[in-house]
Length: 445
Image (cartoon, rainbow, N blue to C red; front, side):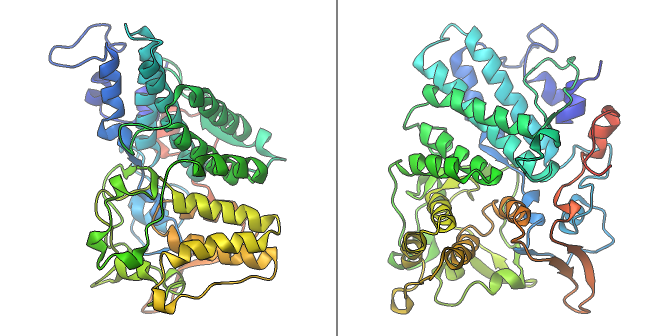
């Protein structure tokens, strides 16, 4: 019987022992074991459950330039050059996989533990369970974008997905990888289970609401290419109270509201560690901007390596924003050939981002032309937000992603190429996970 925390979470044994009394069936001296609803809600508010985004997902994208040594074997280098394995050190917790399954474990602690509390079945208890279900689903979606192939309805039932872990017993055997269809269907079912339990407003933007759940469904269905359902849930999420920020109204970036209080943020998610601060813009991304775009002024900084990413005030956000939802809506309209309506949304966003004196509406004469403009605006607005790899992967499925190259700027030598349809859009199951699961199905067989 394999130890689940070694197989999936690959965290220190000390962390595992602090998580639940199921490990020893005793209450270790000096440790707080969740027993009351307040304890489980405390887990929801902990950094583990609010800092959930793996920063590695930025390494993979065409938005990012890194002059990292092509011979390096670090997770950053392996991700940047699209090598099959991100973390090659079998003794190390695997990047992306380890942190996300750690969050999934804590979500399972909440989902399994709250029904046993004295406050079970209260409105708050149900809400806490619902929040954990949504957070767990979000983690699985991010894992899918890295460790599973793109979603094709015709093949998803025969494509490996993820091990769907619901147990908190470390002696339980690791589940086999579900199919991609079963994985996605489970995420959708979990979110739909959560929605009736969730409030329409919550204590802060790191906590989950019905609108957050609908926003996550919008993402999942967009990833699947199910545009009808993506539109349904985008519209539901956009019903949440919100307001766009006009960057023209702020003299400097420091005057913009903090991410945690911004009227543009539906759900705030921080990185597991670090931020994109000083990450370098690729030449391709820079070409999408000009000096009249206030995003270029507020969100960039020049350093010794080139044009780097800056940040608005507060803790950098990788969650769901209303600009994202609007751009999803615009994309779906363009795909239905409602190109004027799609461009109305694009122009609404641009009016809030482009210097007033330089602003002019964009127009399109067809759905395909509008779609190209929407996707270009999505790339500008959501740069370094954590969604570019998600977008690259789904657009590659449609044949809309050009070849991406990692080029030495001094010698022009091509170090790596990510071709359309490349198998390297999917990273392999981590070495350490394979070590403890020799029978687990692999992606590159």
